[in-house]
Image (cartoon, rainbow, N blue to C red; front, side, top):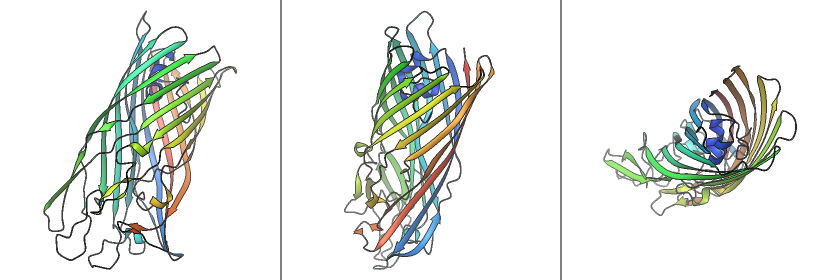
Length: 394
């Protein structure tokens, strides 16, 4: 359904993810398990004075994102409870060092001789644990709340969030390597409302507060092996969603969601540029709007087919392309198709495929001292995503 679920509760996972009030609208109690297999295709190209100097593909491999959702209608009560454990955000890159691509050139040891960052590896993973309560005020209105516990890890290598050092006295400061960071805990909440106008129309809205994360500690070492560490926080942004669904056509459901994602005020994502000591303050992302449109058709008693389209505003300014080579989440269009097959009266198998269409951004090659005239860096990405899951109703 392309993520159009704020007013269209189809299963436990989608309802818990996008609007806690909609768990009251599920037809029955449910336990659902799922997993996303994510295969990104990412590359970076660079040129100087219009001459192409290198194109390098990242090798992130396949990432598995598990999801569990449980919803239970309390008997003879307007109360519905639920619990979700789901991956909600992340990315991964793995660029090899290059002798032809300026961004990936080895870091320079010689003062006045430009260099790149060398090999780049980044990984971000955020998991939400969401105990949820929804109360059906009457036959039309439901309200819901979900405290959120978030567990996250962001790996950045080389460690550009710390200032470069010149411990060996060469006169040329360099960024340290970093094998990993500390797991970060955070907390937030999500609030929702769900309104059933009549048999055809449903409306919904939700507000997810930021997940305020503790600052993770990155342990590294300087050029001489002396210990070096830095603390840095990566909060998840505030998200506001509004949605409508229409079921006035026999065996068909159509849903539309509109979202606002406030990256610009989220620590780590919104801060921009380099500090005077050469450490990266943040990725400089803008807040964006997103739109999700989905349709469902019951083909037979056992088979249901779905399709969806999602538009995401690009949060990355073109002038910050080189900073975001390691965080390529600038895709804008995605197409989804899939369906559910009832294996037994209370067991369904769910599958879907999503394709994030290729998208590129281009900007100058920049350093802590500023952009380099006559240079160009292009980041290109697309993603293949396969979703599989099982839902058990009771």
